[in-house]
Length: 281
Length: 92
Image (cartoon, rainbow over all chains, first blue to last red):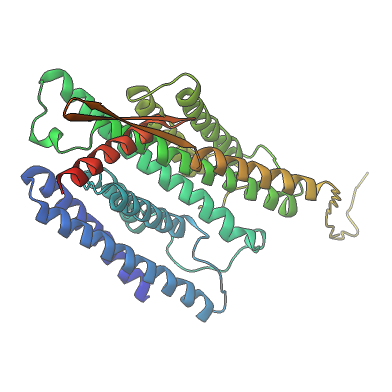
């Protein structure tokens, strides 16, 4: 399986990219930042290619389905979406310091997908419940949402870190000084959360329409549905708190972190509960 | 008294549930409206700017103000960018 080989290389490329972002952070030399971005972009390109190869391989095996159908494939797609959204943010804000916090999350997702013994990386035939055109839309929108929330989480962590450093010294030291300004982090948390919220909403909607056709009802209070609703409500509270109560900065950063914990539980935690969404075994 | 099992048959059955929902187009319409609404709310906020130039003797004072229905952090950033660009233009 050539694409599996490629994916394990991509894992190392993301790790190397993280190390270079870290070097840039410590040394302050822009050269490392450029090298790190280059590695992240080439990792993304290689991963895209690997996903396309896996897609093609499933057709060659006579099954023919998108590579979004089990835990391994969803993890790989999750990492892909994180890097994709991160690189767009980096390109738009021209600030490379977020990479230290977000690229390792993509690396962890890739590493977990390839190392964990419970995760099966073979291409298998699609079970009947998943044979639908809704599959691609539903999974892609949900995971783009998760990835945007991951970026918001990274920014939230960074915000808290930056806030912590401010109390000790008047002028932030070299490391913290190079982080983006609190105002910018706040804007990034808000923007990525809004993006993720729109994606998650579309994901839940397509999911419930699909459920209507596949299971006969829009909403059956399956654990994954319940937890996605909880996640949705938390981000809705966060966005409302910002608009209506004018919450900024630290409180939003904390909510972004709480929201991300819910995202993780929606994605991975509910697999330990019995339910209809049991494809991720 | 002796009980004996003479014959055992296996029967197959399938449970089917049929749902007819004439409201599907309405639900789809509602979903589409909600997505359009979200996109309008989150990605299309209006921004309005005022630029005022005052002559104070030989100097000119330029003040910039802005208003947005939401998302004032982005507004601040845009005003900063505007200030920077005006500064660069004036130097050139």
